[in-house]
Amino acid sequence: MYKHILFATDLGDDLDYIIKKVAAMRDLTKAKLSLVHVVEPLPGYSYAYLGIEDIEGQLIDESRTNLNKLGETLKVDTASQFVEVGPTKSKILGVASDIGADLIICGSHGRHGLSLLLGSTANAILHGAKCDVLTVRLPE
Image (tube, rainbow, N blue to C red; front, side, top):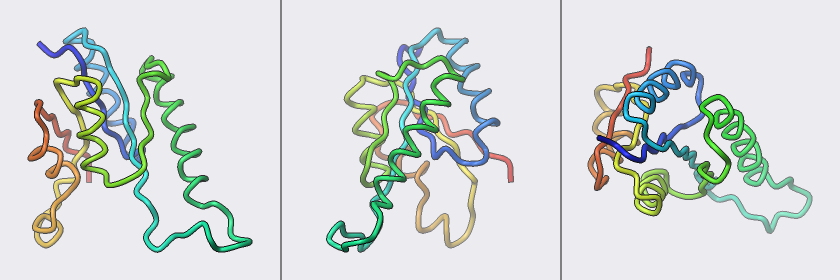
């Protein structure tokens, strides 16, 4: 059975729905649980503009605060909480590899049509992971 679960979250509105499933899987498997959230760099954003606030830094700080709250809810210590900056897929897969996760749990909106052709984060993780991936279908 699974020994280390990585919950990859976008900290979105559907968080309460997926938390229950993540907690249930952890309780079932007695696995260690880690959390990861990725902040994608802002395109064309530069720190060179004088007088403009560090928007990306604020996003990172806000993400850390929100991930900490999630960690408290799921009883995950701060050493097992990761806020990464960069391309979502590679950062999630990198953390999974670094911590030795054998299951990644993430949400999926089940998009169809053009957005499915372009690919979703869950799809990218599924096809790039070296461990099992559980995608939880989020409510519409």
